[in-house]
Image (cartoon, rainbow, N blue to C red; front, side, top):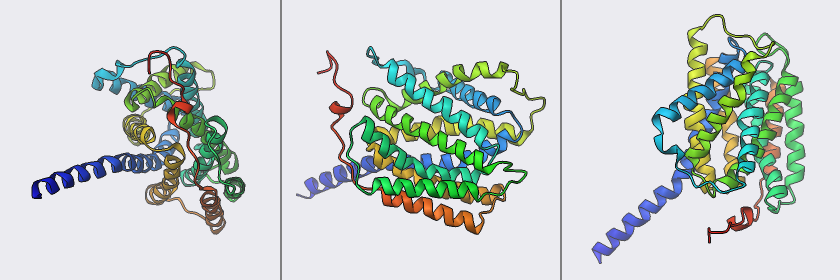
Length: 321
């Protein structure tokens, strides 16, 4: 009996660790994303936003080419190019456009607070696209959170580091709308493709999409390469575009989209602490109250949803039965 008990204990312990792994990956992704606001703020202070986003995508693509040789082993099915194209247009393309330009206008701490809206946006998108049933309190919670975001944006005083916080925070809100579309597309695609492959697709597609932006007349090519901004771009390309997105894609492939979206609430916590430590950013009393309103709205909106079976999300194709 002792042998059987030992074997059962080992199996149970193994199951617990494997079940916790997606959640640990999501926490790590949020911690890294919280730091990405700091790194992006440092990078766009020295380089044009288009140079920054192209460079981080290019760095990630080079790492994938040389370090992940088996990323091309996929089982593509006709028609999947549509959700893949939608995914990369949402993120990295439009998401990075809004985020990069938004962070030139607002602080990293305020921008990270706007990310608290993402769980609500994901829940709303899931109800429209995946036909998930929303809890009755989702709509008033969403309205409360949006009001908090606009209050937060209006409460930011212009400064040298944040010349137009209202517009910058609005652009971060637009980035969150794109992130919600990305999450829904990713949840659907993760039924057929590995997280590593989907992360690589983002890097390759982002490099191609942002390359023409280097030749736009309003894009300023760098004349010098200060060490701190260069290291920030390398960090964004290696640690954020690969590790953070890889962890998030892995987590969301194994956790319900609405539940995974709730982890986004950790981003402002990490970002505000790091903004205080590294950028000397401060929150005013009004901004603290507005942030509390955002969190209150998000908490109010979090209710149980009824997920559909995977077959209802992405119908099986001929030859897959």
